[in-house]
Every structure is written in structure tokens, then in C-alpha cells.
Image (cartoon, rainbow, N blue to C red):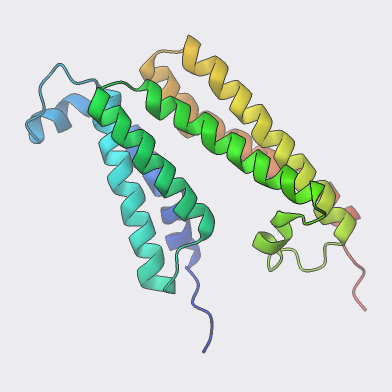
Length: 200
């Protein structure tokens, strides 16, 4: 039986939909609060956290319905979102949500660095179908670069969560991190081309 995969539009919705919902819900927090009977004392970012958790759960459900599986990274992310998002809702404190991002970036970096230390570049297992011609040296260097990038994101998140307002942090998280990740991925193109096996 052929392996089921998500179409490009659905994959984009699964990957980025929850973040967009988070941004939109934060911008319309008071309206959503009135709609669901939430008191005005509840911050917009806390209301947006609930919407983010629901959207993440929906993304996991869509992935399972379409492909009959949920990617391990989505399971990990969904679990952390549920834990830290739940703490944010319970304590009415967005600090937990902001710490969630640091934890996820640090965990990704740690997983990739552990793979390098044990000579198992884990990116190869995740992205091999996208870059089948990449050599082992290329996978090692690509994994190293992404690990360093996630470390940089974790450190940056720790700085900005202390300096920015809630609304500014949401903008940074949704747009700043997304654009930075896209630009970093594009910057790896020369490495991918340099370390690709010549077709036989």
C-alpha cells in the first residue's frame, strides 16, 4: 500500500496554521473573550494560547486522518504545547507559553547534537526523501548548522521574552521566527549543492 502523504497546501496548514491562529486570536482576544464569556481581566495572549492549543490538536488530527500517522516532531510539539499551554491557562500567566518556545528549540538542538555525537545525523532520517543525493558529510554539516540555529533561537527567545510586551512577543514568535527560519533554510542551499552526489 502506498504511503499516504499530506498535499502541500494541507502540510502548510498543519505546519503554520496553529501559529497564524495564535496571531489572529491574540489580535482579537477581547472579541473572543466576549464570544466565549471570558472576563475582561484575562489577557489576550492567554486567550490566544487556548486557540493555539486547539489549533495544534486539530493539526495533529488532520495529519492522522489523512496519513494515518502523526509525525514524531508534531507529537513532541503538541505534548509540550499542551503542558505549557495548560499551565498558561491555569495560572493566567503567559510566561509558561514563552518558556515553551525556549524548551522546544533547546530540545531540537539537543536531539540533533546527540545524533552528531553518536554519528547518527537525525536530519537524514527526517529529510532523506527531500534530499536523497546528499552525502553523509553533507548530512553531518547540515545537522550541525540546524543545531546551532536552534541554539540561537533558544537564546534569542530568552532575551526577547524578557524585553518585549506580550503583543510584540507574539509578532516576534509568529513572523520573526518564521522568516528567520525560512531565510536560514535558504542559506543552506550552497551546502546542499556542494555535498550532493553526482548522478550516476
